[in-house]
Image 1: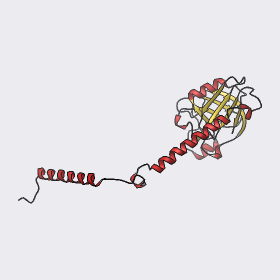
Image 2: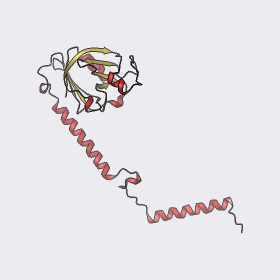
Image 3: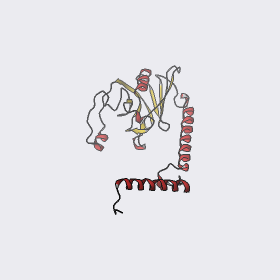
Image 4: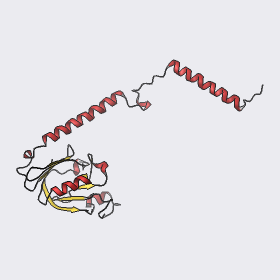
Length: 212
């Protein structure tokens, strides 16, 4: 007998070995521990915890929306319309001056407490196709950023912007929809472009704004 396997013999032997191994696994059964994180499975406990956390988050937001649904809890009047920005539930509420229009929008909020400003302000200007300039602190932290971006798809302020009496603070659109509903801004409040366009038409210079 030749001391070397022919290619055909090697293939046949390998196939036979695979069949035997497969039968052995099937007979003995493979029962991996699905709660073993080393196997890369999402554990039952993790799934339960995640779903529970998501449910609690939804309940908190729903409760916050109900609690914020009455402008009288936050404003003495609705002259020029009023905007309530809830940085915790990441939502913006709007009531018209005649109180016949109410809007609720999901928003992007500041990414940290240090960037979050709370209190009363008002709309001092409105612009379609706003341009953008980084603040001095932004340029200090990001010296490679451009000093100016004109209107267009690359503009961080999106399609419309409401300028507030607070320096550098805006309520504006965004071309990056992933930011909405998250703590993702450098201090401003971001909306989907379609929704900031609607809010833009509903507001006026003098609209009252409260950040909570």
